[in-house]
Length: 364
Image 1 (cartoon, rainbow, N blue to C red):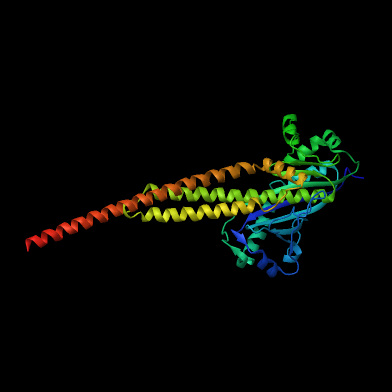
Image 2: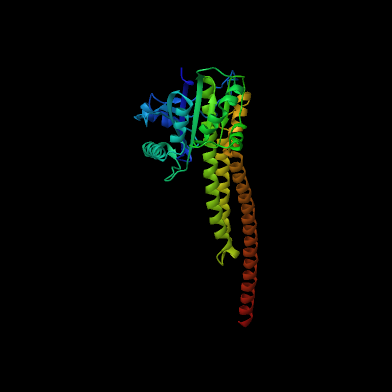
């Protein structure tokens, strides 16, 4: 029996295609092959541990997609505009063969290009159900090695002790041996819920040793966490662009803006609309999956989010939203000042007009 008796290699390619997807219209457009995704936790959990708005999931065959380099495709559409293409294939063999797959598929440019082509075609095909469709889109990828059975059953501690070097190499995709320091850095961020399960996430790959049900729960969390990362990356870029544009506009006001305040009024409206839109979509994204009551899922999500650096992106977006709010308040104050200036000017003009009329009346 091979060292790895049963496992699955899964590669997620996620793309931010639109501001929002109409999932009801999307399911109607796809037909019978589409279904509402359900989050299946590792252990028994309350029924409310589910997606707030269930994504639409469909096998590649339902959309006319064939296997890609031996991987079976599956699509998941999130209501906040992210589409995830999951490519999966089974594996049974020895550790060197497993590591060879890692070396081949971590940052595989050809597979990334083919995945991007698939999602670009989907973007055109379902353009009618996309609101705020992107012409160019950000992408994330994540590789997961899920081991469901070993030739020799082991506990999580035994697996780390005996195969830690191979697991570390697997997660880095390197062709040369890693230092003990690097191995320690990779392996120390792990989660073991039961004696015979283990999850080790990194920033671009993860290792899972669990039952099929446990592996599927972990895959759902990895996919969801990366979809969040993608959204926060997009809105961080958007806020950078918009803040630069607004700074330029406010630093170079036209001469009559000081009197009428029209430029500040327009800027305030744009700022307020952007602030509401970004707050709404980030709140919807962050609360898309409720894991209250499921300790394992919550812990795994927090560990994965930490390895992805999700909190840094969230903080960056929140800081820029605060800056946006400060600029909005400044613009509102400038509008009030400009209106005060306009009122004063109006009063002066009325007084001047009355004086002119008065003297004209005397001259008669």
